[in-house]
Image 1: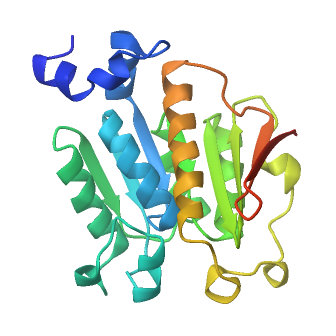
Image 2 (image 1 turned 180 degrees about the horizontal axis):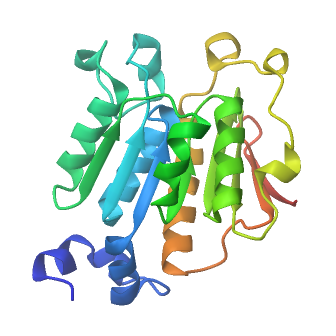
Length: 236
């Protein structure tokens, strides 16, 4: 049963068709892993914390640089040099002190990621590393876990929701991306608000999958062209 405090905190969720009290209880019982605490992961994690995900695990090994502040709005100038996972964890607890937060200051590998993923109900992948995305997608497919992957590049963003037994990220990228074909935002740039759009879609997808509301991006990819203000979905 929801407490009086929870009914107030999550009232805007509970009012929604497709969520209601039962859906909110599902969120409070959910365990979600957010991979990466940069532009995508930190923003998506804030929405998930606010929505009442009962146990959020966040994983990142990077530190905050001044160049991050153009788009990673969960951080501030006073946070420069701090571990992203620590700053993100602190912000999530400020948003919602009643949920459980686990901080993992590490680079995910096949060996250490599999037992972490196995305990989760859903994985939200927000790293800026194609090799990490491929690894997480592979492990989610092997372990039968829903996986929501987002990416940004310049003016463009993408979101894919992989569901167990369906088509997913690996059907588009069956092999790890060639490092020579990947341009990081440190070299190619990225529009500041774009990761916020992509991360918001990822968080919305996570809430839908966990509550059973609406139609997720299963077997589809959302493409966002911020320069021309266009969005479209492609079947995969």
